[in-house]
Image 1: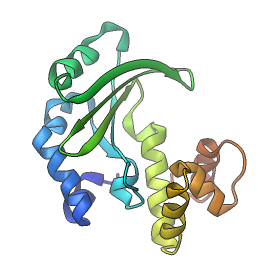
Image 2 (image 1 turned 120 degrees about the vertical axis):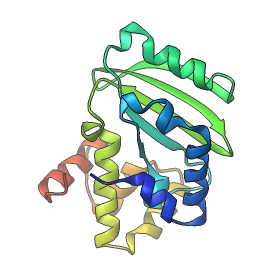
Image 3 (image 1 turned 90 degrees about the vertical axis):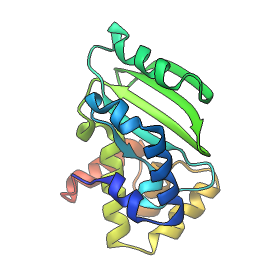
Image 4 (image 1 turned 90 degrees about the horizontal axis):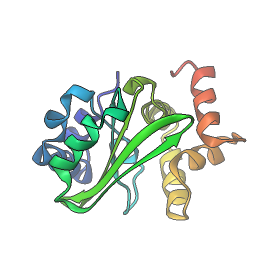
Length: 178
């Protein structure tokens, strides 16, 4: 398992600032029962100025409101707090967003183990690609500056077609990355 939190702690100045914000917020301890994992572009170093800190969690029984109420209680007083429910790929999810110490946080809970969630698997695949082909990093960042989301940027560079979120997963499976 890739430990993105350690990457942040030992990384660039921005990554260390992100680690500090996560630690000061206490989110990993406050929500430990949901197996929180930091995902996204900041841990792998392809972030742009408005990149957020994604923290994914496994939350069973979303309909019981326990997780939603806990998130509200902990973070509703943070800047720009909002919480929403939606369905993504036929799974109900809860998303909470807010600003803390200059970082936008996105908490993402769904009833699926974190290691099976798309965000984690995409991050692992993207990290592998960046290690194998370091020159791609600048290309990804340049596409992101032009408005691309991360997965479509990787797919554009790799020449993968179709739904970029599925295409990247298929690439990772074919290469034995995940």
